[in-house]
Length: 225
Image (tube, rainbow, N blue to C red; front, top):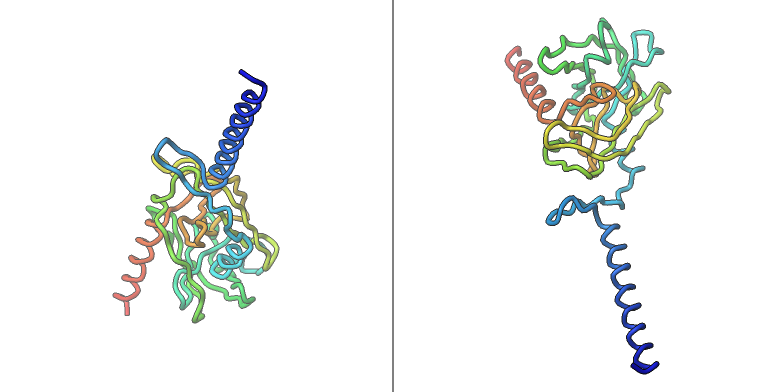
């Protein structure tokens, strides 16, 4: 083998190695390889600032009657003021103060909690409120991004915590380390759709349960008219 042949072969090897490295780099940007046939895209281009604003429009502060003590969050589920939260948030409160994103506040009495899900409904006299879309939490796969949204103890303050789904096949789990500021708030996907309600530090009430309880409650209201 001549020196010229050696240089040509070496250049080809370097070129092939470079292409392989670049290909691996771009694949890693596109998604996480779950197995040999499945790639879950991370959608890293999601605008978390806009997602926070979007979810903030349908997330409310829930305060004690004195309007000073922060209790948790709630999710607006109808444009005319129906709100969902967790029993953990309202606990034994007879009257709570709801603060909307636009600053309006209302004192309301929580409805009795649903015994099977621990969800609680509240109703404020308002109209044309922003409501979320719901997506099936069961369709999420390990490795997909989600985010929890809370209103925080600071009035009109927002808390936004992105993370990943870590298990969806047996029990829905994430890598989020949620604190009390997030309880009652929504867990959203990268489209800003609600996939669950945060019921506790590592507890979620999934969207199918939220929708079932909402439909049942609306049916009861309709029958009572």
